[in-house]
Image (cartoon, rainbow, N blue to C red; front, top):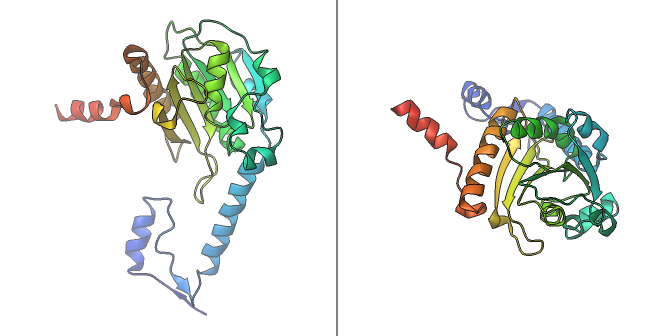
Length: 252
């Protein structure tokens, strides 16, 4: 059965150059054309692989160019438990909590596998390096490499280590167009079990060249961190104004 185009073929071809979304795919009978269906199945398989692929902390540590690291686990003992019990992924393993270094840190970076170890393996170390290079005299704690971890595990880590601020770099939930997207979540003075997502700032889709670049993410993140320390707040009370400032400079 022949493939039927949707709308003007040239128009859809032009629009598809500007987005990864699956638009104007046409149809073959009552279904998608075979090649688009196969592409969708391939993307779904990549997303499943990203969720279930094991975290390799050695790979991340190797990319941190000599920065000290600490390895921890969440209270979720395995991947299946992690996926079925999100609450356990938000809490530190009790044994690991007792052995993390304690100090007067300005910030601790937590690299967490989340729902895409692939994203963490490919992007996290570079974002940490680029951000730390912009922090000047900040007291930066050893980087925490966390397995079976969700964003809120950073609250527990910061509390246990005595850090005023936590940045959690985590593999985001894979979509059908991206299985390697990294997110960065910034929280000031987190309190385990009390801090909510409204208290965090998030940078998402860090995955050059198709998403936010390492330099762009680090610049935004370092800027937010500086403002967070100045104002004593993150989340809905803290806005990223870097893009608006750049636009205003171009207009002047």
